[in-house]
Image (cartoon, rainbow, N blue to C red):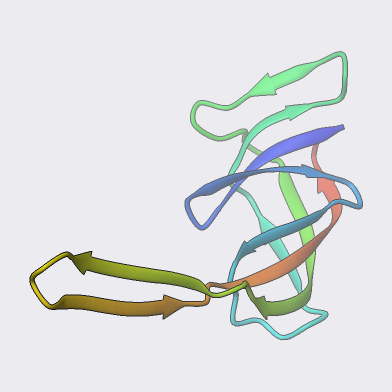
Length: 104
């Protein structure tokens, strides 16, 4: 059984025991979260598609860890114009472990 769930505007495939890497949450490690924006639920035989969300279905997850991704370097360069700009960015993520899909 799995569900497609919307978390912070992005869609993820959530199965029991799956680990999801999502945009950063401020919640401490070990805290339980519930997501009710479920777009689709299927158990292999029966599939329920929401319009836009499936009512009565929630996904329970636990915050495992917060971390930063590898650095992405941004370079802007124009030849013969003495123009060079360098910048870097490290995106922050949170790792969630899906505990259960309730109401499916």
